[in-house]
Length: 455
Ligand code: ADP
Ligand code: ASP
Ligand code: MG
Image (cartoon, rainbow, N blue to C red; front, side, top):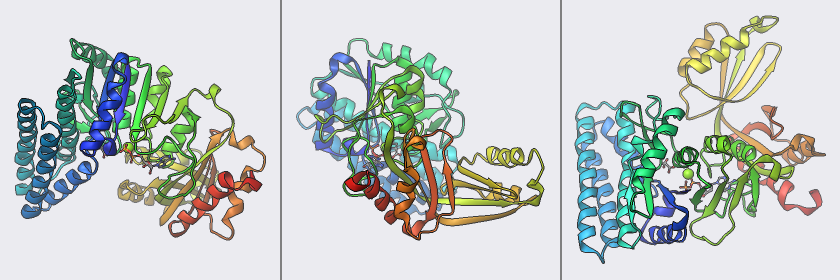
């Protein structure tokens, strides 16, 4: 069995969906489970709809709901024009999904109240719409395909907007559901990103979570391969939107990929690697606009050479500095601090400590007010904003000659606020001012990957 995940740009419109279906068609012998994201930008639109409903902006909310409906009904009509029965059926399904959303959103709008639970329901609509349209189109184009509701398979905690998978439950449910769905068909399609609690309440896996859905399904069905089809030729030496002259990596290790994703490379959701590692399932990152390309293989460590693979970054992070003289000679201080982060569900990236100070970095999207208030009860806390975190990643980089010179050499007189050489031997990370991050990333990339004299 093969899991194939197609991201938003790979299902953005008529041309993209047609290409995607041809890619699946070529692999039917491997029994594909197709996992799709919402059409490009649709999840953003659904976020806007929930925000606008939450502040009771009736006119804007209705306008956005119409935009959502029209984009999908138009697309269904275009893709299914040669098969009027399937077109009518698909359009009726799309309208039914939109009707249900309209009723729900209008209730939110009337009350002006939006819980995480309601938001999870709203933002998961995009994947139901895309998977419905693509399922009908696959059937119209001669691929007998069954539709599976991911909420029955991907079970999570009740963290509605970032559900934590209940792996045992997923392992129990997915093989049976997929095997039943495969009766008499050539392919199965389901939604990325969406999930539910064990009692059926809608949850989602967090932004970019379709990659994670694919690897959870891959793990549960013991897939031969997990393919992540996106809009770049594979995992590259840096984000091509920020750095020119990036190179595509032929293969990287699970560990390198996990670090790259965790430290900002958007090409994969940070948790994608974990389920695949458990069953040692190779992941391939491929370009749906160039299906014949080799892409990048993500494999076990032993197949991968030592060396620097990429420069990742998180553009907007916060540095939380905790000062306390009580830290000196006291055991248990760190425990207390990290318990507060854990209770507040704030995840920490980098840590550095000195005699009376701990500094940690956290993603700026996290809510830290409560954590800061609790820490302030026994320490002085200063939060630095407008900072970026840059990470140089590669297997055993700490053993490479001159890696620090190569990493920090191009920085000139740029201020560095924190440095952390990962305990994993895979990454060196540091924090700079946000207004210089682009320059720093480009300079380091040039020095590490472009300038022959420096390699
Ligand atoms: P999808 O919608 O297919 O999930 P994403 O936009 O989530 O696609 O991820 C693909 C994007 O990730 C690329 O367009 C690229 O800009 C970005 N990206 C960031 N870092 C890297 C990297 N190291 N290699 C390749 N792409 C990267
Ligand atoms: N549609 C979701 C998002 O935009 C999930 C995904 O694309 O992976 O975040
Ligand atoms: Mg993505």
